[in-house]
Image (cartoon, rainbow, N blue to C red):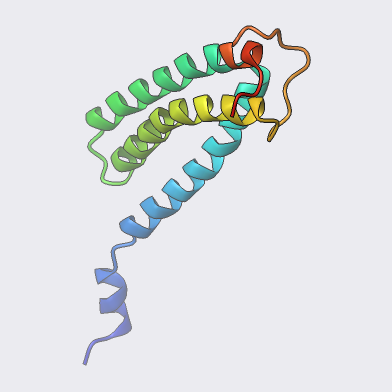
Length: 117
């Protein structure tokens, strides 16, 4: 008969832990995109997300830990995905779905063009 201690010793929680870390990272990157575009604009956000993605991708490659390496890789690709999301956030602001920062100059092309869609 299998004992409880044997079951506990065979359970691998890495998959669930990585899934939770992915869920948390996505949950953190969503407001980072919105607030980043609002306060910094796409011209600042895109290089920051690119740099974060490159650094965490390299860190993922250089880390041999079975939990930390995939989590760093997930953060890297969340950063890369956020680059696309910043552009889409610009469009959402132009359409009036999100507020425009009144303190930031209208230097981005979508802000000068108005709402075309």
